[in-house]
Image 1 (cartoon, helix red, strand yellow):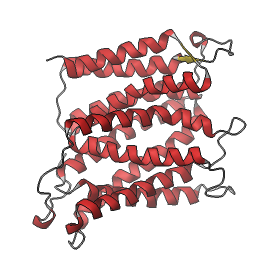
Image 2 (cartoon, helix red, strand yellow):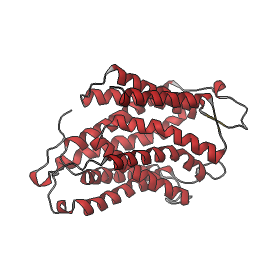
Image 3 (spheres, rainbow, N blue to C red):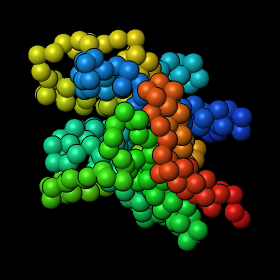
Image 4 (cartoon, helix red, strand yellow):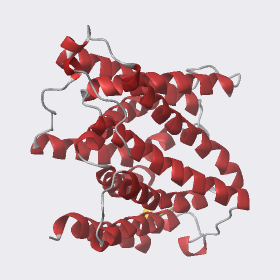
Length: 322
């Protein structure tokens, strides 16, 4: 994949701000916690078993919060760039990145009509493989057989957990008897979803790394288009429900946490890789399970421990073996 735009001399970042080891570890742990707490927080928001607010309005607010925070960081750390002219070559690539993310967010909603939620949870783990394939192909990062095995173990962990890592003790049905359903259209849509998911992540990483611009400025471009496209999507599919209708303090927690996590992931893609992001998402299973047990009295099953074992082996194979 070629360079998406070369910065002018005035825009060149003097040195990339790579987070120190302690700060880096703290950011990754925070990201794991945010990913893992997202589903339990959504459950806490439910009223009579349903989500009382518009999910598209939450996405808009998350993107807007990321945009505001990016502007704050730009004013704090890179104020000297405010008077510098920026070429459209620097800006336009982020429009496609935001479009891919917005398309996938909408695809998630529509493909639920062609499969049950359990099938979606299981098959969506294929995006681990699609992301790794596109990462290896477009960014020319060759992965040895040991690392491919680690990534397949990550996918196996996600599948195991999705099949029934948690169980409601009051529910007589067991994970082993879970019935999955998907139509041919659903199979096509989940394939497109996994492809776009991997493509959007790898494409964004390529832009962030090939442009010699400060991350705060790059985020400003990305989230500007994110707000614009998601606003259009919200009003395009808008119902009679108000923009902030059904919001609670838990929704505010979701908005702030997801915004912070988005900024952390941009740091990860700028200074590490999408592979690190995949490990963060997979490790969030542990947080999700702990919170589900504590808040909703769900029980851990054998499949949860299979998932934990797979994650542990994957981390060891990818990072621990030399």
